[in-house]
Length: 377
Image (cartoon, rainbow, N blue to C red; front, side, top):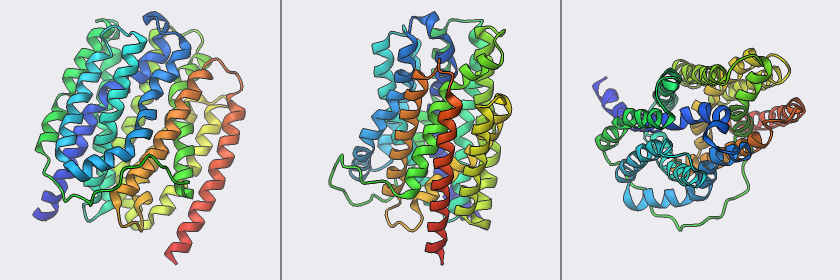
């Protein structure tokens, strides 16, 4: 029993380091789409600012693998935790477009290092599903704290001070990164920007991230404004933060259970079921039932996200490489989705786009589940 507890410490330390780094990013998503005009950011730049960190990760994920193989995991994660605190504090330093873009790039590099590191440490634990579920639960706690605190400070202090406070609250992430012990290094790889044609699973991951992490997260404010046109900007910001908080709460509470269910009933079965339930929520959210649809989507997307690394690395010898590949396609989906969401903030035909996305998601889910059953046979 003590051995299992000791083995679980490193995944927990890595996850805590990541969750504190996520705090500033989480509040920025609820703040910027609603309040961009008040801080002199043109609406057309919102999608770019929120997505550029993801495009950065797409390019640098192969390089990060190289860094891990040469430098190990601990030192890069310490530097990444420090850079994340710096970027969060910088969000409130003036809100110039150029500075925001630069800070988002820095944060994207930090997040990519911390995410792959946290998942890899979790995959070292014997009960993979449980470790991934617990890791995801921990990871969501920091953003949830930011989404609860941020709106409370919105009417009290300036945006500059809000992000500075959140940056201060993020500093324990550095401590947990320092607490990490080095894991065995994988053999060095030849660095390459070449990205192979995605597997069925990674195509499914790309499309799911495009629909939920990208478009839907950016469009929450627009959906709420359409449903509640009489609400003020502060009320819409608080409501958007509330929806994103619910997403984090679900992940906090559901992820460990999802990991246990995957170990017991089969990872592919739980993963496929979560996708189908996400599809039902997307249709509901874009066809009049915005609040109910968002609840369904965020509830089951957390199940999906917590198991993605395990599903991506199933049957693979190089776990870190498989996780990084999957992260690249998820980043690509969320990046293009956020960019598309920024351009569609004033569009009245979202339901048609989401209907097409749902059809593709159902098709790829069927293909993935069928392929998983064939491999298991």
